Amino acid sequence: MKEISVFDVIGPNMIGPSSSHTAGALRIALMAGTISKGKPKKVQFILYGSFAMTYKGHGTDKALLAGILGMSTEDYRIRDSYRLADEAGIEYEFLPTTENKGYHPNTVEVVITNEEGITTSILGVSIGGGNVKLKQINGADISLSGNLPTLFVQQKDTPGVIAHISKCLNDHYVNIAFMKLYRDSKGENAYTIIETDEKLDDALVEEIHSLPNIRNAIVIDL
Amino acid sequence: MDFSSAASLLQICQDGGVPISQAMIDREVLYLGCDLADTISKMEYSYNIMKSAVDSAITEDIRSIGGLIGGEGKKLNAYHKTTPNPMCGPVISKAIAYAMGVLEINASMGLIVAAPTAGSSGVIPGVFVAMQEEYGFSDAEMVKALFNAGAIGYLITRNATVAGAEGGCQAEVGAASAMAASAAVELMGGTPEQCMQAAGTAITNILGLVCDPIAGLVEAPCQKRNAMGASNALVSAQLTLAGVGNLLPLDEVIDVMGSVGRSIPFELRETALGGIAASPTGCALSKRIFG
Image (cartoon, rainbow over all chains, first blue to last red; front, side, top):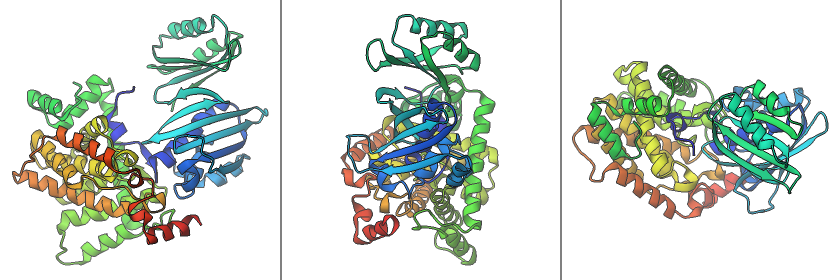
């Protein structure tokens, strides 16, 4: 657990009206956009529970689009995000559903198709106070909060990958705070999520990418 | 450096002869390893957001997304300015006008500081800006007082909750009110112990308050409860400064608030299924907004 700072209590600074339905929604979409890589072309937001019922009154829709556009939770342009998404040529669709999958009440699935035609689906939950958790990527269970600088790696499930990643981190004097591994099935697609105490730079990410079994490596730093 | 209870915070204050605000700054810098200058300037930035939210609320025409609120802060501000001897007196009159106004800024997708939450974001700016205008405190003094408020909010977050969905409105507006009460006491020259008595009094006064927003929106009854939270903070501060203590230590009050929160039924914890939200008028308004 991250220690509680005074700015978690006197903060976050945010565009209203709701830390969970506005700021939290934006953070989910912002992380989803970062993970999907490349310029988004089409985005679908499948809204569950309270998000489905009240998204318009909380500006959740505008906040989600703003996250895709890369805005921060303090950005005054959140209220204009429909127009800005149109100008950026991004197609978007909000699909509220009454389907109950046992998800947390504030859940959204963000399905992003980028310009290369690659689709990434991310399930995120807004757990209160603007804090969020990504729970699934393309159907695989994960857990990612974005509270610390985070290295997100998609790899082939094979020996040596973690050794490579930790060597790269060591070479750059980055300390691992938390580290988790997930996989779809043995020998197939796997994910490594590493939260760090230090910031992560591009050179480090490039080095991690140099191993052929690394399929994707990105940094999430909100 | 670190503290996890009001008792241990008080010990640090008494051992070092420092106010709560300083103990919280020290925790941020010495325990969490943040840069002192950055920490102060971040808080200055937060206070500027609060002040400009107050300013916009009393000068601009505002309409919330749901349309349930808008213009109340302005109305209250005009009322106390044109009424020769308003019942609430100058500090509370301003505090309630500003607190309600900031909730309008929040509900219209304006910029606020969630202190501790968006739904209770009017209380601290209401009390702080009113006190600064009436007593002439400097910005630096107000910024320092925000660390005092932050210390109380940190203890409540750590040992109970500030989320309406977990603890009802007593957790949100109750926490904000306790934070503002403690800061007000420090600004007026009270001791750390008195700050904690004021915070405990403020929470006790709002204990059990439910969270029942019409249509699930942070508009009504949230806005008026922010006015109440601001005035409750000032009442609690004045009780304390007059020498009226609090029977329970703050740690116990926070524990009680947490356990009362857990026993508030689900319908009355931000789900819009009970209370004002479930009244015939509440349901009709919800239908009007969402169809």
